[in-house]
Image (cartoon, rainbow, N blue to C red; front, side, top):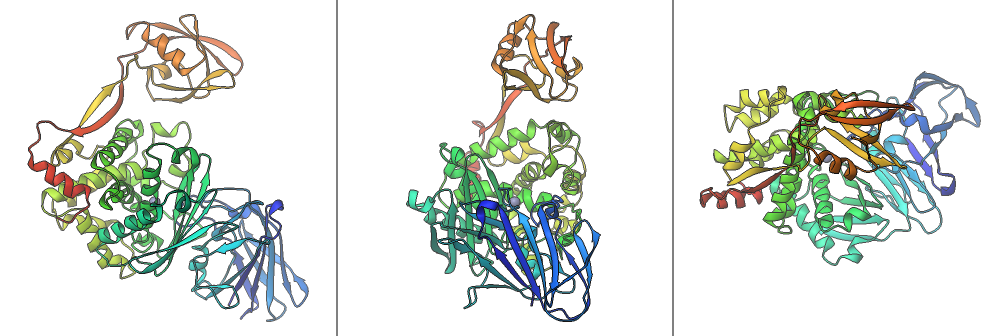
Length: 569
Ligand SMILES: [Zn+2]
């Protein structure tokens, strides 16, 4: 079987040294490095970090012929064992890239492991050589010689590798062994109830899916605690989380991290094993267009806020605050009027993962709108005696547990089985830029959205003070500031002759006069000072607040409690 031998013994060089050993069965071979990693839909061109590629056989160098940006062919002189040697620079600390420093090593193996043509479904052996005092954390079965075995190439590159002198902790979920390993902190040591709460969240995921035990027979949590980071990547037997120290220190920090834990753990089912048909099997060499990421990520994002509550950890008021914040963020996204949810899923590779200062005007995240749609579907189905948990469990049994990928049609059928009108409605909500009917859904559980207006006239800019300059960071399409001629990156100098140095200065000056009066803006682009009229309008919505409707019938309290508990009706 192919053997991937990795050396991390010179961490100060940030260079991962790789030897891929193999007993070839034929003389014409192709090697290729994945272009992306499942769960993160962007062509990452991992090959850009590769250097010193060399193929050796019987102590001789064998020529490689490049056939693509990340693939090579070789004509072997014989069927002797071969070794492919290369180095990879590992400077990028994210959950889907490689990071090697004197403090630790983290490898996303999609960025490291070369696929040998014809060996995709063969077992692969993995071995690591580490600096003195480092421990390996690898979620694969370990062999007596210290190496690990994956069932095939897919499982190999679905394996994150963490290594370092880190603390780690064992616990179990419904009898299944779990480990928690952390770089940059040690939550189980700092917080006596941390692991017990993680276990409760994991059990709540099992209950939601209607199963006794987790879908994996062992599981590893890796947490990278950084200053300001945030992220997570799901795997079949593990997850890698990144969370900021500053965020964790906030009053809601622990709750947000538990939601991230819930999100990635639910992916054990939704997206890893209950998977879009387009990802069965994965095509690592190209972008794979999928219309159903709203289900994979939106449903997961929606329930991740409810799961810590269903686990008995967070209060109803906290869940409503979090759901309200997301609904508000959605309703304040201008891009929801431009991009449909279906298009958002299909365009993940070129939009969501490449978002910039212009994106908010023309795109809507399938995480965010997908969560809004999941909420509407859940409440609508509950009104009719079923609910999202019922649909999730049915899909798990019909597709996930059976290893069948689902299509968009399968999803629509699964929902419309409980509500025939959804066959048309769901398609409409996916294909149009209309908002799903939120008010109606929320009324069923005695809730309403209340708007809070901003307290200054609106011009539609977002400003940021940068090195003494006040710069336009974002601009709403068709807003007064865009009509005035501003673009992202322009520097503001003064409004009506008053110097602007901060966003607060700008707000204060806007408030000085009533909306619709012409103001004079002085600004700079490309080294030239310019002057434009600016005509602010009425204050816009600052945010939406999700609150109990005082006029709701008392019966809604019971519906609300069952809903927030993710209980089956
Ligand atoms: Zn996710």
